[in-house]
Length: 432
Image: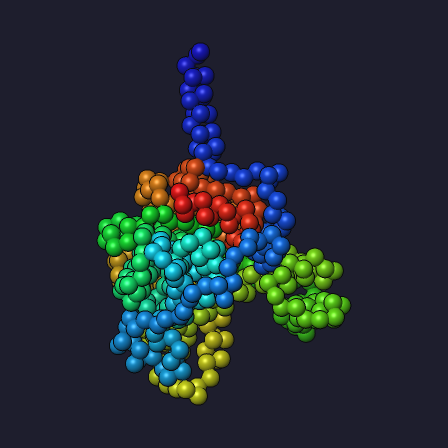
């Protein structure tokens, strides 16, 4: 064989090898019913396609509160009484068992729907389960974040690690055989940074780490979500807001049904009706939800650090003070605004850092590429049509994780998490 053909064959082998090693699930073998990424993200998995999991009545669980920053507890305004201590939820098995920590996604509380579903799945499989709020949720920022400026992945991981250690100390009598870690969306990226931190501190020595729909480039992911609120929607003008349009459709749907049903199947059934939201309307709904999360971050971080960006300097906030004007002001600050005004100054103060590109590399999976490639205990589940992925992100996941990546053809952003096929795969990956 001529030398150039041998070289070409070698290159082809290397390229193909990097692709086929990933556990790609072909579309013809994957029967998740929602192939529209926007619909899947919003509506999630239909109830009849979810596996059977324990109900709350069958789970021995309770909520607890940690005092992690006593000095800040007394500095917070009186109307922040509910978040002066950090809440979390523990579900315990009746016997010795492995324990899995769940890290919620962007802005999410520990009791959010996705965390609750994962709790039921893992508890039913025999795990103790601890549910943690996202470091970007207002309760975590107020009670557990040392710098109250989330978005610096390494620092967020240190905050989470401190919380995990405090949880273990509070339940020192809980019989735990091994520790596991998982997270979805931003919580998945944070799980990678927590696992990396644990390699040096070795407090938990996590046996398996499962990342569900993580962002690869954090800036790309938040930019994708931020842009969704810019969708142009027919019927929205000066006289009719987007929210009025959605409510009108929902009202007509419920009137036609003859009853109001607000269970988890609502959005799936609604999207099957004549009043289904368009892609543009769904995009606006997803983007608006994210923008509210960013507003929470901007407001809470500014309040605690007294930066005067959202809350004017010298403003006294008391029990009767309306927070609505400040929150409206925070809604005008998108993620770029938060990065520029609050995150980059904090990053430079902590790391003597440079510009935006350096920050992006440090807070994204790029910073852990070598570790993620070499650590066999870390696995990833993702969707090829995930809204938070950008150009080259799937290639990065293939190169870095190889056969530890399971890639589904559809499901949007976390929309297929509770699909029975995905649920079975989650348990397989945790068990190794």
